[in-house]
Image 1 (cartoon, one colour):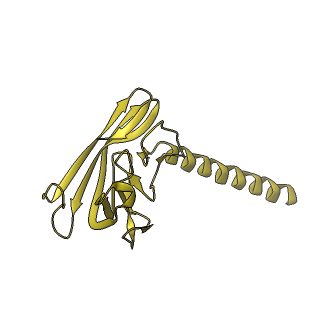
Image 2 (image 1 turned 60 degrees about the vertical axis):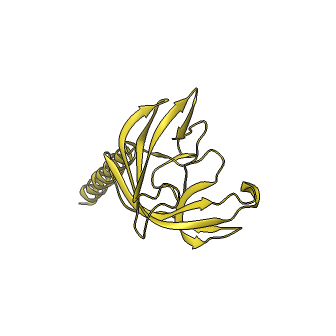
Length: 163
Protein backbone atom coordinates (compact mmCIF):
# COMPACT_ATOMS: atom_id res chain seq x y z
CA UNK A 1 0.00 0.00 0.00
CA UNK A 2 2.75 2.43 0.96
CA UNK A 3 4.71 1.59 -2.21
CA UNK A 4 1.58 2.19 -4.28
CA UNK A 5 1.08 5.66 -2.73
CA UNK A 6 4.73 6.52 -3.35
CA UNK A 7 4.40 5.37 -6.96
CA UNK A 8 1.23 7.45 -7.45
CA UNK A 9 2.91 10.50 -5.90
CA UNK A 10 5.91 10.04 -8.19
CA UNK A 11 3.70 9.69 -11.28
CA UNK A 12 1.73 12.80 -10.26
CA UNK A 13 4.93 14.81 -9.83
CA UNK A 14 6.17 13.66 -13.24
CA UNK A 15 2.88 14.68 -14.87
CA UNK A 16 2.98 18.07 -13.16
CA UNK A 17 6.59 18.59 -14.30
CA UNK A 18 5.69 17.67 -17.88
CA UNK A 19 2.80 20.17 -17.84
CA UNK A 20 5.08 22.92 -16.52
CA UNK A 21 7.70 22.14 -19.17
CA UNK A 22 5.06 22.23 -21.91
CA UNK A 23 3.76 25.58 -20.66
CA UNK A 24 7.30 26.98 -20.56
CA UNK A 25 7.96 25.77 -24.11
CA UNK A 26 4.73 27.42 -25.27
CA UNK A 27 5.67 30.73 -23.64
CA UNK A 28 9.11 30.62 -25.23
CA UNK A 29 7.47 30.37 -28.68
CA UNK A 30 5.66 33.73 -28.32
CA UNK A 31 7.10 36.55 -30.42
CA UNK A 32 8.61 39.48 -28.57
CA UNK A 33 8.39 43.20 -29.21
CA UNK A 34 11.44 45.38 -29.66
CA UNK A 35 10.87 47.70 -26.69
CA UNK A 36 13.89 49.89 -27.38
CA UNK A 37 15.92 50.07 -30.58
CA UNK A 38 19.49 48.94 -30.87
CA UNK A 39 21.21 45.59 -30.59
CA UNK A 40 18.39 43.14 -29.83
CA UNK A 41 18.67 40.86 -26.83
CA UNK A 42 15.88 38.55 -25.66
CA UNK A 43 14.69 39.54 -22.19
CA UNK A 44 16.51 42.89 -22.31
CA UNK A 45 14.99 45.00 -25.08
CA UNK A 46 13.03 42.24 -26.85
CA UNK A 47 10.16 41.44 -24.49
CA UNK A 48 6.80 39.72 -24.30
CA UNK A 49 4.30 42.26 -22.92
CA UNK A 50 6.76 45.15 -22.47
CA UNK A 51 5.83 47.97 -20.10
CA UNK A 52 7.04 50.58 -22.64
CA UNK A 53 7.99 50.72 -26.33
CA UNK A 54 10.37 53.43 -27.52
CA UNK A 55 9.75 53.99 -31.24
CA UNK A 56 12.16 56.89 -31.82
CA UNK A 57 15.93 56.70 -31.78
CA UNK A 58 16.25 59.62 -29.36
CA UNK A 59 13.45 58.74 -26.92
CA UNK A 60 11.29 61.69 -27.97
CA UNK A 61 8.38 59.35 -28.75
CA UNK A 62 7.39 56.27 -26.77
CA UNK A 63 4.40 54.21 -25.69
CA UNK A 64 3.60 53.64 -22.01
CA UNK A 65 0.66 53.43 -19.68
CA UNK A 66 -1.19 56.43 -18.25
CA UNK A 67 0.78 58.49 -15.80
CA UNK A 68 2.21 61.95 -15.34
CA UNK A 69 3.11 63.91 -18.49
CA UNK A 70 5.14 67.12 -18.71
CA UNK A 71 8.83 67.98 -18.33
CA UNK A 72 9.66 64.92 -16.19
CA UNK A 73 7.11 62.28 -17.21
CA UNK A 74 6.30 59.39 -14.90
CA UNK A 75 4.75 56.87 -17.25
CA UNK A 76 2.77 53.82 -16.24
CA UNK A 77 2.83 50.41 -17.91
CA UNK A 78 1.23 49.44 -21.21
CA UNK A 79 -1.77 47.14 -20.68
CA UNK A 80 -1.88 44.01 -22.86
CA UNK A 81 -5.29 42.38 -23.36
CA UNK A 82 -3.91 39.56 -25.53
CA UNK A 83 -0.56 38.22 -26.71
CA UNK A 84 -0.54 35.27 -29.11
CA UNK A 85 1.79 33.76 -31.69
CA UNK A 86 0.13 35.89 -34.39
CA UNK A 87 -0.63 39.26 -32.81
CA UNK A 88 -0.77 41.30 -29.62
CA UNK A 89 -3.38 43.84 -28.52
CA UNK A 90 -2.88 46.48 -25.88
CA UNK A 91 -3.53 50.04 -24.82
CA UNK A 92 -1.70 52.95 -23.30
CA UNK A 93 -0.52 56.43 -24.20
CA UNK A 94 1.63 57.73 -27.03
CA UNK A 95 4.00 60.17 -25.34
CA UNK A 96 5.47 62.80 -27.63
CA UNK A 97 8.14 65.36 -26.73
CA UNK A 98 7.48 68.83 -28.19
CA UNK A 99 11.28 69.43 -28.31
CA UNK A 100 10.87 73.12 -27.47
CA UNK A 101 13.17 74.92 -27.24
CA UNK A 102 15.12 71.69 -27.88
CA UNK A 103 14.39 68.02 -27.11
CA UNK A 104 16.36 67.81 -23.84
CA UNK A 105 14.36 70.77 -22.48
CA UNK A 106 11.04 69.85 -24.09
CA UNK A 107 7.98 68.45 -22.35
CA UNK A 108 5.89 65.40 -23.13
CA UNK A 109 2.22 65.28 -24.03
CA UNK A 110 0.26 62.04 -23.95
CA UNK A 111 -2.41 60.72 -26.31
CA UNK A 112 -4.52 57.59 -25.62
CA UNK A 113 -3.88 54.77 -28.10
CA UNK A 114 -4.76 51.19 -28.86
CA UNK A 115 -1.65 49.20 -29.82
CA UNK A 116 -1.58 46.27 -32.25
CA UNK A 117 1.59 44.28 -32.90
CA UNK A 118 1.53 41.77 -35.75
CA UNK A 119 3.45 39.97 -38.53
CA UNK A 120 5.88 37.88 -36.45
CA UNK A 121 9.15 37.02 -38.21
CA UNK A 122 12.65 35.92 -37.30
CA UNK A 123 15.08 38.83 -37.38
CA UNK A 124 18.68 38.48 -36.20
CA UNK A 125 17.77 35.06 -34.79
CA UNK A 126 14.88 36.34 -32.63
CA UNK A 127 11.15 35.85 -33.15
CA UNK A 128 9.71 39.38 -33.07
CA UNK A 129 6.64 41.28 -34.21
CA UNK A 130 7.66 43.33 -37.25
CA UNK A 131 4.64 45.65 -37.53
CA UNK A 132 3.02 47.99 -35.04
CA UNK A 133 -0.16 50.01 -35.50
CA UNK A 134 -1.39 52.73 -33.15
CA UNK A 135 -5.03 53.80 -33.16
CA UNK A 136 -5.68 57.13 -31.44
CA UNK A 137 -8.78 56.63 -29.30
CA UNK A 138 -9.45 60.27 -28.34
CA UNK A 139 -8.84 62.40 -31.40
CA UNK A 140 -6.11 62.53 -34.01
CA UNK A 141 -2.36 62.15 -33.89
CA UNK A 142 -1.03 65.69 -33.28
CA UNK A 143 1.75 65.30 -35.86
CA UNK A 144 0.12 63.41 -38.74
CA UNK A 145 -3.47 64.54 -37.98
CA UNK A 146 -4.67 61.00 -38.69
CA UNK A 147 -6.51 58.51 -36.48
CA UNK A 148 -3.81 55.83 -36.82
CA UNK A 149 -0.09 55.47 -37.32
CA UNK A 150 1.90 52.43 -38.52
CA UNK A 151 5.48 51.35 -37.89
CA UNK A 152 7.72 48.74 -39.47
CA UNK A 153 10.60 47.02 -37.68
CA UNK A 154 13.75 47.56 -39.76
CA UNK A 155 17.22 46.10 -39.57
CA UNK A 156 20.31 48.30 -39.73
CA UNK A 157 23.39 46.11 -39.48
CA UNK A 158 23.04 44.12 -36.27
CA UNK A 159 20.39 46.42 -34.82
CA UNK A 160 16.58 46.67 -34.99
CA UNK A 161 14.55 49.90 -34.96
CA UNK A 162 10.93 50.98 -35.44
CA UNK A 163 10.52 53.13 -38.55
